[in-house]
Length: 232
Image 1 (cartoon, one colour):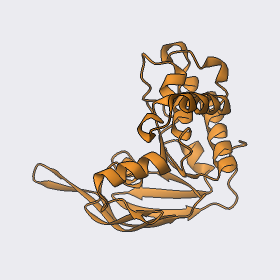
Image 2 (cartoon, helix red, strand yellow):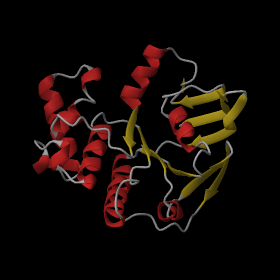
Image 3 (cartoon, rainbow, N blue to C red):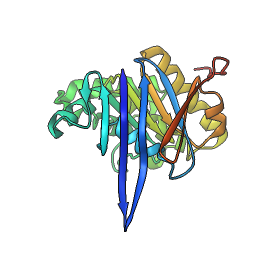
């Protein structure tokens, strides 16, 4: 479970103090799904970075599975990220000179997994997102939707407990967006992941079972029991 208590994040911009997060209290249960929406500059990506241990809060605590992500040492934090958290980004962040297979395998290298096992797990992850037959293709030989599938496979090959996605459909057309959302929802349901996603897309936000709206560093959470979730 995630538990955020009084989380603040302040930046200095010249003489001005920017309160990107301003006293966030939030709980996200294991296996839960949360969509985060809000205006540009409202703190959405900052909140996701806190949840992923990519940045540390100015104040308050961010707890995941008993770990205070803002207080533990860098080596321990790196280990927690490697073992518990998978990341998917809008820009895919694939290495252009590596094949899909090799891109997915990069996630396993820091975990000290042997080469043969890395190869097996990476191929299985690509198959799970429908790209087994494209494993030897480099990113430039794949469509945007296929590149995002590779990025999803790379996030999930570690078998994390948490999947964090920052605008994962932002660079995709509507049809491909729907395909990726169906894939993500299906993987969330099948694997029991805790799935947290930032989006500007009102169509995605409108179908979220739980929506966190963030404005000026403050969060309001609403439940939608009648949400039409993606088919998966």
